[in-house]
Length: 224
Image (cartoon, rainbow, N blue to C red; front, side, top):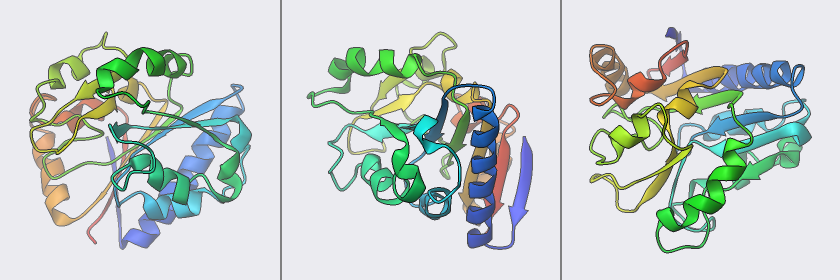
């Protein structure tokens, strides 16, 4: 784990966006396409605002969310909605979005349709990950009954999860898919999350799921 601390959030967002663009450009030198995995939530929005204008061959980039709520893409709680509004614009509009939702009642019904297309594009070239104060990342929540399955080294690429702390079912990339990314950036802000990071390094992945993606990760932190 490589930790970089920033004076303010705007500086962090710009720097992380530049690093992601560089990572994608480097990946495209050696392969036909590159897969970028990104989180939802409020933190990555400013990163997306800067990244979408990067001068790279976006037509060769596939983008996937690290996790998604099992709701339609137009739903107000959909992470897909955020991507379409703030990342898949400007030059990045040429990128291909890999969906994490199909119109079925339960996520288990949609997995056979979603998984093959994702596994065909692995490994992830660049993964951008957040972290909660409870030390979760993606939808790998410590209070999820499905966490052990998501942490398994032979897990399918996508795992449906129903954390007790969340109001709806979710779907998440498995831990080994995220940890297997060629470049990983963990991004968060706030003193509470820095304290969570300090706790996480002393715990197991079942107690602190963020630990499952620490190997070689670049961690970016801003206090505010």
